[in-house]
Image 1 (cartoon, one colour):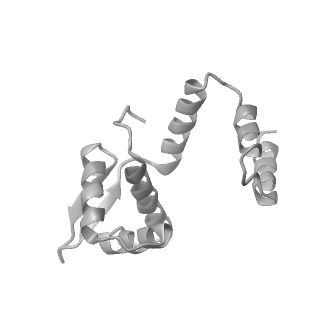
Image 2 (cartoon, rainbow, N blue to C red):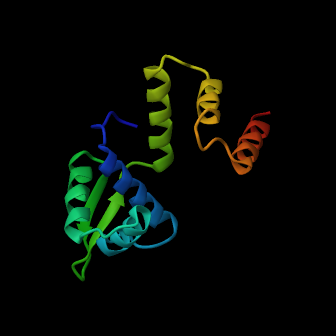
Image 3 (cartoon, one colour):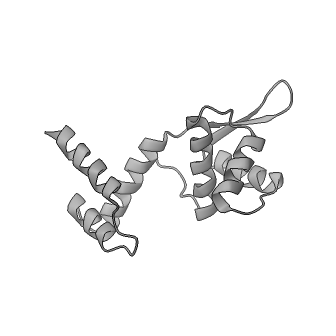
Length: 131
């Protein structure tokens, strides 16, 4: 992934929603993004809010916004979700000067929510796939 401008917390939340809307097979229109974003935040979100932050994402090179024939704004992700997650993981490992994945697991284990059984099972499956 090319070096891109860092995202603010709100921009990252919206980017996450854009990825999610696309993953569930919906068209990434302002309306669909807004609906999912409202469910995520559990509060009302204005279309202008989505459009403003989507504009920031477009300027930073994370999405492209096109208008469909019927005038709807379609938000096309230019950055793959998994590539972004990998890049962020590398960044945080470098930032904390810890190159071991074990440190990440220890940090999660110490989190007040902790790791669920499902999280641990998923991690075990991942480790088994590496063998």
